[in-house]
Length: 307
Length: 307
View (spheres, helix red, strand yellow):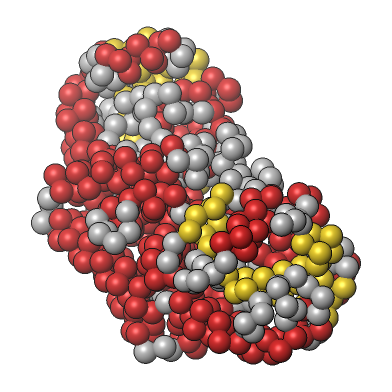
């Protein structure tokens, strides 16, 4: 089976959609890319940047002749798109997505994909805190994991072809069940975003400390905690509405642990604090050792470097 | 009054102490720097790197002949050092510190500083998640705020001389009361570190998701939330033990806000989530606009870049 697709249809041209376009142009994987975007402004930018050869205001037109369809819209919008394109999807086409919650995608999209096509949910663990069609770049997926959650009974050769596509774009591949994916991501991605948003909101509501002071002295740690709070609000609202159980479970654990630390501070229990901080530091070093971050002292980096 | 000191004594040669040495060598501010470190290994490294002209195992020996003494030890160790050096401090010398809690420093150190010297608490808002005598670098203070909290009655010309010293090292200066400093830092620095440590601890205790999975998929946000959890455990234990009231106040507000978000997720209240996320994003943009962080998509950066 050819490792190259004839035509990819990218449905939704934001950070991930535009990065896929850049990456395919740089690393290959398809002869042609067409796109769909709801907003006229995004469609204009997509053509201007040469992200796609054609762009359509209707997803139905975009999937005609495509042997790979990638849903890149916020999770809450994917069901309606799947319902619209279902009757038009080409026989043998692979339909995948990039959403951060797989249970909701399977629930909302799978029923609409015709039996003559192949639906394989996917999720590249890559992103930045930026959004929109201008935010993408070709190297976004380099050295990043892409998780596929194929449903039982999916043709192995078809899954392998999609894996091969993501590998060309620089990704490392993992497979897991839909349910396990949503639990892992609740901890590694959804909870961190919730905490970042919540920290900014807490700071904004203080009476004794002004917002400008928080901004001014943010180099003390606040700016690092809140970097991901610049992420797209619509995308993240949909994540929390659609991965409710797993997020509430992880959030409950986080709050329990925080109550324990609160108590240690109140009672001056330095040993509990020191032991927890030491253990946390070791795990943090594991992230660096696993190649998922750099040990460079980023926290203290010079903000005048624009790179 | 000369803007240059004859001899600086740096007491404690970790990240901040060693960075002061590098910065003075690069930007000026003193004719000579001597140091004190408790650990023989640190003293060896300090000489090997040429951070100081002389290094002493006793802080008392280090302050002889020094017209600027900078306490760079963890907060919990500063009181004992101040008590030891008190009788030896030179007439007219300035004694300052770099601690993240000013109330505790004033409480523990001020009584030991003789009347013929000048005690001015200080705090450069700069750091990285690294520690030790090898972690310092000359540009750490560039474009960063340094807060001085002079006590009532301090000679203005003396405060100005210390301000001038920090400005030479690249800092911008602010002044505030001891109490206000500790409240501002509880929000901008102490709470973020507590949350980072707590997030790592929460992830480490999961049953269904393994620690290696958390590390593997940390690019989804977890690695950004936890970067500062690699910071020095001793220093941070001392911060929380010594800024208890302000940290508990900010932590209480954080937990209230988080309970509100928890409720919004449980009840599927997308509007509350969207509005809070949108507001948080705007404030986050303020941090970038204030020059305290870069808009570069750091979250998605390639970890193979070692810089």
